Image 1 (cartoon, one colour):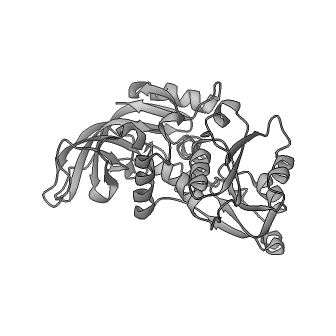
Image 2 (cartoon, rainbow, N blue to C red; image 1 turned 120 degrees about the vertical axis):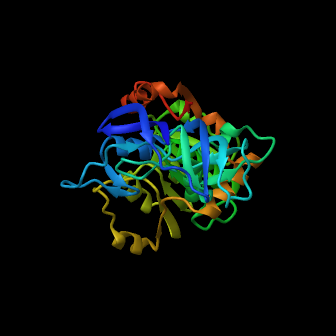
Image 3 (cartoon, one colour; image 1 turned 90 degrees about the vertical axis):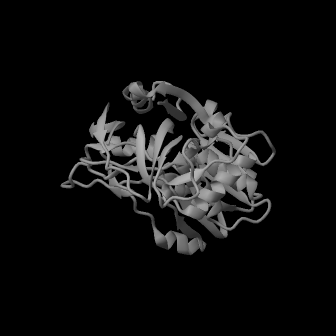
Length: 331
């Protein structure tokens, strides 16, 4: 079947074009996309040619991962249900991760007008909530994974490096779990989006000595440090401010410059937790936390574009000519 998709055809080249999808089978659903949420970091690194799949960095000699259908998250309306699918009905609005596509570097893609997909890629949405709040569910789950991975005792000091979307959701998750959270970023408008309260504070590293701020807020040491941006220098600096038995959670994309001294971690008896991808239990819990208001997504949406202007959306994201967080494509 034919569909329309956002396609990366070469480094920094975005087009909206017709693509072919396999015909749906008895175990498949067809979901018509209404809104998709761009993953600025992961999709951006694919678009720049920095990775070839998942968390696999591009290395010289690798085949370029083009053309590929962008993205992995959206909401839409179910238009067809295979005879083997019993618990989803035509007409329901759902979250859908990826659908199968033909003739691309990867056989799955997210930002496509009609996703031919399996039941495990679809989540039913709770009644009484704005469906748009769930349109970035996979990415929100990444933030939840960052904030949920390490043990947290009530009042423990937690530092989140990065004021992007994953950083915000990691901070929200840590605060929900009872941590005292300090977010380190470089954008005043992003830091201002932290939910108000005594246990979430933002520090602008462009204006303040953030390491000194960490020392002052957590004189007994940092229990959890989460790197959401791939800043090895910041991670190394934080190791010296960790309490014994603390945890560093690594979620940033480091490319091929990814060396961290294990001996340094051993000296401090600090554990390293690496997070990646998504799992069904984490997706389910993230959905519940959005529905209950503990994870806030809508306040992080800063821009919306018609899907035919996807190239303009990406030009804005890559150029950084203005502050951007959540970018929605309207289909």
